[in-house]
Amino acid sequence: ALKTIVSFIEPTDELKKLAEEKQLNLLTLEKLREIGRNNPIEIVPPKPADTAMIMYTSGSTGEPKGCIIAHETFIYSMFGVASAIDLLNTNETARVLNYMPLAHLFGCGTIISLTYLGGEIGFWQGRVDKLLDDFHDFRPTLLTMVPRLLNRLYDKARSELRKKGVPGRVLFRLAVQSKLALIRRGNFSQNTIWDKLIFDKIRQSFGGQVNRIVSSSAPLSPEVCRFSRAAFSCFFVEAYGQTECVIGCAQSVNDIEAGATGIPTPLNYLKLVDVPEKEYYAKDGIGEICLRSKGVFKGYLKDEAKTREAIDEEGWLHTGDIGQWTPHKTMKIVDRKKNMYKLSQGEYVAPEKIEDIYARSRFISQIFVYGNSFESFLVAIVLLNDDYIKQWAKTEGYNGDTTISPELNNKLKQVILDDMIREGKRRGLMPYEQVKAIEFFKEPFAIENGLLTPTFKARRYAVEKKYKELFQNLYESAKA
Image (cartoon, rainbow, N blue to C red; front, side, top):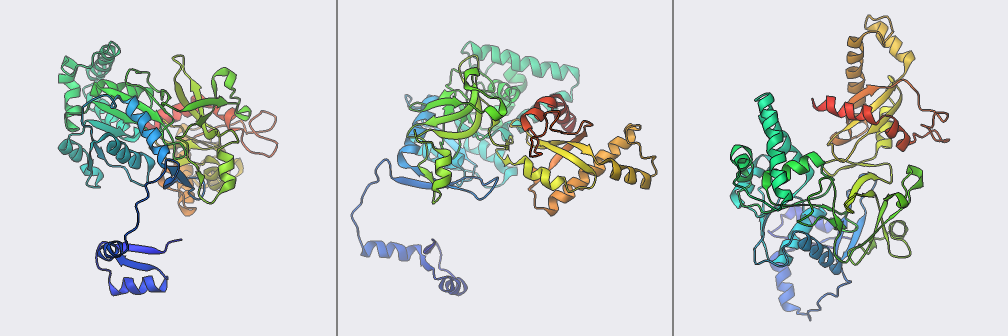
């Protein structure tokens, strides 16, 4: 589809030749301006329903899909965000530092939102090691954050205080609890004893002017959410969206519930629908999130079949995310309808694809890969291939009974994990798709115990439910 390329500088002869071979029209910016001056045309402003942008999905489980987004979609969505963070009825000039790719909806949406609000936009240097310097120098008033950054901030603050032993841990916990108690009463003071001891340093590293924070792209753990609110002592909003709907839900500035994403943004309708295969039912306040509004995309570029899968006949977008109404009647993201996990840094992973690759290891009889939106990595449980394990144990000088020696089990885990990672690299897995920790289980998945389907696929909901505590322990030990 590409016809013309515009270069800001004079292209080399080599590039001109390459463009000619590819039958592409290669122009300089100055030449393009000259063409425009010599061929004036009537300006035709776009209509609200006209296409504004083709924004591509991440393509985690296949080819990226082009989402057709209209002008009105952005306007509806940006109005919703501005309303949620209370920037519509203020004379304040918002300042934001954008560090996310403009090919990502969060980065692109940040630019459009600040333009909509008449704000000021800064751009980072492009170096992760200089990002804090950029924040400090630009002094933003609005932070657009992803959970990965907030997780790092939390981990760093907690680890520094843990170095001081029990008093440090007690101080950290007491500081967060005390600041949250003030915030619940509407007191966002930044001059408490806790600010002087802990939080001032954090705020100053971001320039000291932050008064609003929006966190999106993946769910934020309640623990990190509470810490972030206490540390910055400002309006803190979690928002939910995806490329197909931009922003669907957002907290209001007065909503301080941790781990939830608020209510539908203005002009958005939301409903939950049953997902019987995962035992989620809307009557119980849990199900697949469906959205309908002008804020929903028009469809996938040149893919009517996928569009019909996503948007039903009544105009509802089926997001594939499982939501649950909290006791406060706000929405919380708890799962994905399809067998995908969204990690805390926003990456989607397809566990079945990863399992198929790891199952090639001779050590493994069955494997189940697990992840959740509050963690940045995957873990797995493994059923050993006893015949091969006995062979391996003998070559290592053991008697083949891997259940006797804890030392042997620990060594075996590392050997198997290394073998899995090698296999993953050979098969092209991305680093975030590689498992970071494993544990063994003894009861095989079977149709009889309800852990396998008749087509011999794992019943993911049943396995996750059965081994919930084991997965939690795996994450805790991996982070210890």
